[in-house]
Amino acid sequence: MRRVSIFGATGSIGQNTIDLIARAPESYQVVALSGGRNIAQLAVDARRLGAEIAVTAHEELLGDLRAALRGSGVAAAAGTAALTEAASRPADWVMSAIVGAAGLAPGLAALQQGATLALANKESLVTAGALIMGTAARHAARILPVDSEHSAIFQGLVGEDFDAVERIIITASGGAFRDWSLEDMAHATPAQASSHPNWNMGQRITIDSASMFNKALEVIETKEFFGCPHEMIEVLVHPESMIHALVGYRDGALMAHVGPADMRHAIGYALHWPERRPLPVERLDLARIGQLTFRDPDPVRYPALRLAHEVMRTGGLSGAVFNAAKERALDGFLEGRIGFLAMSEVVEEVLDRLWGENGLINGEMTLDTVRRTDQIARQVADQVMAARQ
Ligand code: NDP
Image 1: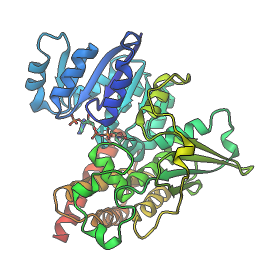
Image 2: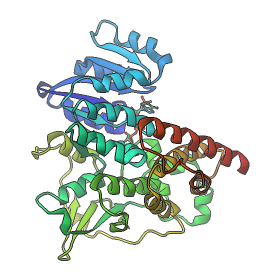
Image 3: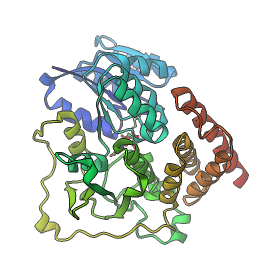
């Protein structure tokens, strides 16, 4: 029996992970499940999977969680320290699928106890890539990518020498507004941005897909995970979302990963790695699909991609600034405080202001300095948004 934990169990990735695990309950001992506000779902899954502990991120919801778990034998806990404690419990495989920078500390704790970390939480690598990769190396813990593009790159590298890689191309669907005019994008509402043409995902990543902030995070994630120069990474708009990434080798070959837009593929690959086991995903009928199309991303519509390269050039803690400013700008958009296109303007202004701050961006990278930088960037983002109103 493999001991597994799922952080962000109530979300889109978490529920897809549970779907796979629940198909073979005899193979897994569930250690910890975590959620945020969706206590009912957390309790239902913790009961049916027989988890040792269920944790909500919100201390004020502990009473509700305890009540929902009464008589089940599942322990209940709440708060950020409880999340980290749960991630420290011995497990063979830990899914990191909390959304946002909140996923960093539990992911680090899982690596410190030597678990294999299935990493969906891209923000961990964006905010603290060197810390995450260094912690994994120090504790001989493995990280397996769950983001579909990074899983595709990982699979495209099997049996190959990384020195022979010339370029890495990650694809982007173009999100909800790929065929909208800039003027229409300026007036887009959160409801319009929350509907993805191909993927069924959490609301925040769906809106980040429409703005390409998600792709910007993924470009940084690629650099941090594979340790390649940022100039090597390209983005290609591919509206059908069937090729997830391509690895280009120095002999001119491009190894493409083709698969359905179903996260259970990448999750299942990380769950069963290094084996390939049958997965309950659609088998593509390429003759029926007929054609796949590609185009370059428009830099005017998607400034987030340019900002990502600036962040990678600067390095240090600038990823933490970028992610925190992006998270606050997204909050601002969801709350109706700023428009859709203003999100990238806010992030750029926060970066400009903090790049001038001596020692902030180039300081040492520890969990504390990443957290401090995150807090400062959020405050500055709030100031920038307030000044625009
Ligand atoms: P969801 O919004 O669907 O789920 C997020 C999960 O995190 C939920 O369990 C939520 O709890 C929990 N959560 C929210 N805020 C906090 C917090 N402050 N502290 C602790 N837990 C919290 O997100 P997704 O599943 O879409 O995405 C999860 C991660 O995976 C993200 O980093 C995303 O970028 C990445 N990812 C997602 C993909 C997808 O297809 N969805 C694809 C590739 C990567 P609750 O809902 O109970 O409040």
